Image (cartoon, rainbow over all chains, first blue to last red; front, top):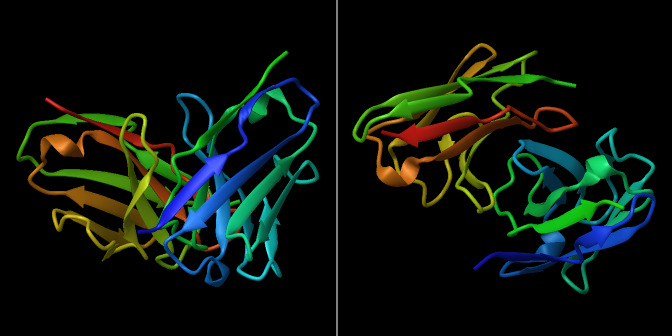
Length: 116
Length: 107
């Protein structure tokens, strides 16, 4: 069974940093591109970043470019999102999702709240 | 960026009815479109990919179609468990973009 479990969220002050993790199981992690997608409270879905299976290709939304870094450790079956210079508008539920294109499996999400 | 205009924003329908949700792409996305269902407090689930291919495990009452840059999700014989918010998403080009969502309520 494919499982994606996010962690690392919480309450953080504006301008500070936070690192999210997504532990994958039930499939060969190193074969799949992975993604972060977020959803602000009561709002729609916003793609954040994608990384290819071998980390050769990385893409970011303009809203996070230069502040967020997506990475992965295939030996640990883990996807990461390093978030710096956080803003109030980054407050959202962050999901990791499998596969480039149409996202076939999603984690349960981890909440990030940016507030003083 | 490719804009996805989804309509309606909300709709109410009765059990057993058929409903259609639409997404209009701002340019040709060559069938690179997915539909997701999200229930309250849950993560989105993939229903349809490549505009009309049914994801494994999804009931056959869900179907997708396209006409030019207009994409449609049809749900036949509505069941109570279909009450949810539905999103379209294009993956023809980066950044992947989502429609604004359609909240489906059952009468």
